[in-house]
Length: 390
Image (tube, rainbow, N blue to C red; front, top):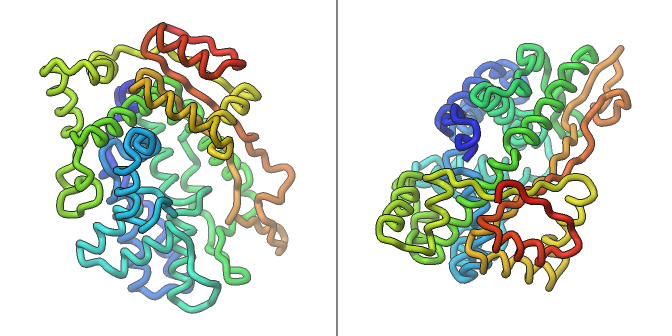
């Protein structure tokens, strides 16, 4: 939904997938020299290309909708989760489960198995070729700090948003070797790369804070997430569109937007505020919390808070999307990166002069009108909320 704030951000997962594969080709030789056969290198390239194939409409926003569906229709929520995991808990993101099933449907069982390992955890420790493939695949595609997936979307999103944060010293970031130690793999850089790595982590931090978690973007994301959850709960979106690999190809963003338009044309009042927000750009009033206030607010939503958290979520569900909340915790934890200085190997996270931003919690709250604003303030009594443009 970032295009509603940054209009040029209309690029798709398709471009990102091609870009991730292109970056893989840039480092193919480094991977080929590191414990893998040529067939395994080819398989790894396929995973770079297909890694996001399981994304549903509106990508991560759709996954936010699952958290809302849990309170709108728990039976349908459990039905969807059980189709993938056999339980009420997912070990990976929803789109990763879907991607694995799509690859199986395509007859790519070996690739599906590699994807499962990369996104749900590596196999037991060992030194054989197959296990090397799994560990190297996880390092370059899902290391959670530095990988080709992140390198592509940071540069791509920076360019299309007009922000400068994601302009990275990419050629210098390629100056690494794959380093094996005690059965684990890491990136090995010369010590002179310290500034370039610092640049990368700072860029990633600021892209999240200023672009991905921009408060207006976040509120639109949560409005769309609530809309999707409500459509599923109201049976406007069949659950089979989510888990049936024969049907999922027909489940597009256009389908959701068309249904919303038809509801508006039919005079459906329950969905009218969604239509006004998305089609007419009728912005919600917004409040933002950071620092200690954000930490306190987050505690209200912590499921470990038991009954209190359930009360909050149920009340928000009853407000039917007229109040939405996004909580984001931004923290950079450099790992899997080793620097070499005068023959000594040092973990990047152990270098004191390496500057990484401290953890930041950001809360964005959107309300449709003054009446909803008052209900939200009462719900979070004790926290000072100042809304703009209600």
